[in-house]
Amino acid sequence: MNSELKSRADGFKRMEKEKGAVVILVSLSLLVLLGVVALAIDTGHLMVIRNELQNAADAAALAGANNLYSKTPSGFSSVPPVPNWSAAEDAASTNAPSNKSAGGILGDYEVETGYWNFLHNPEGLQLKSISPDPHDDGPAVKVTVRKVAGKNNGPVRNFFAGVMGIHTSDVSATAIAACGNTGWVQPGTLMPVAIPKWIVIKKADKYNNSSKVITVGSAYHYEDDPYTDAVAGQWTSLTEEPINSAKHIKDLIQNGNPNLLSIGDPIYIEPGTKAVGYHKDQIGQYVGKDIVLPVVDAVLRDSVKQIPAPEIKAFIGFHLTELIKNKGFKGYFLEEMYVGPSGPGGWGVSEKLYSGTYSPPRLVK
Image (cartoon, rainbow, N blue to C red; front, side, top):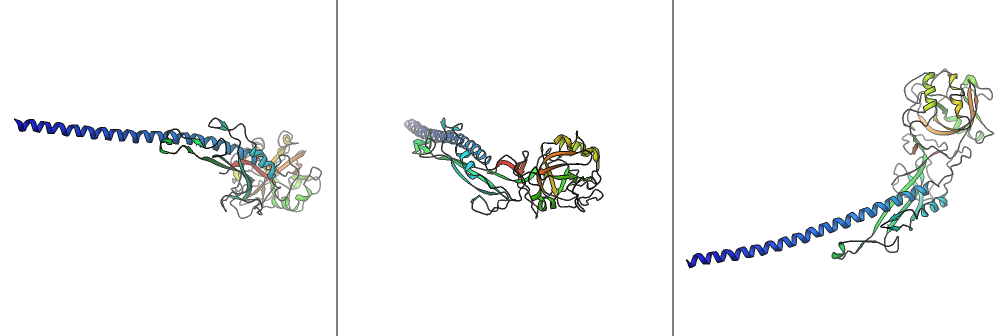
């Protein structure tokens, strides 16, 4: 009997020890769990702050890049205009006080300007002092926003990490916005008239203002100063498909290219005059307005079918000044023309041609 009582007593002692061990394990687990939850809350808070800083950096970089070039056409140039670095830097650094983070106004912006290579060769922002490739290097604005000691109300205060001695955390975000020579255009951008490359290169100095206009139209339709064995422009289907239809041309005049087009894409040059397109209700509705035309490396004649279809070499801005009914139209090339629904880069061809158009800024990083 004494042996049985002793055995029961030993069992109770073991149970008490096990209960104590469980309490310790549970306590330790709760501490670990609370630590994980605390870190999760602090990490989530830091991510929210970083997103706020990123939004501010994005907005500031875009605001700066939007001031790199003038928005006013000033005549055709065979080289890109010089970016207005100071205007871009001022616009980026004064993007506050609308941007806030952690309830405080962000007023400290670190702004850099330089060139961005759209082919990422080299990587990163290049110095303003380089000789940029006008086709692959675009002027850019880099903005960094930090919440650190002495900037933007200091670092972020942690809720729970302070228990482990981590009372604050530094947070930052960087954005780069760049402008570039137009490499691709969205649907609805182009008029269905192709301009030969030789005119853009060799004749540009004669067509750089409103008093030196170029006549665009069929070789049979020039009223004055005809060009020998070539024309200033010719209808195009704005697709590789050999569509040769006056109805198709009228639709393109009203609605522009149906698909996204990039430099390097082939477009069919339509033979024939299609005089119906040179009417006040067709191309004539753009008199006094700016239009965008594709540039191709081809000799354009009414009677010649371009097979295979020539590639787009560039996009060029054109201010249409006068309609020549049933024969063509007149106008002059534009410099520094924003092509709104477009983007830089994406050339992908060996021969590139700067033609005075560039795209609105976009975030590249």
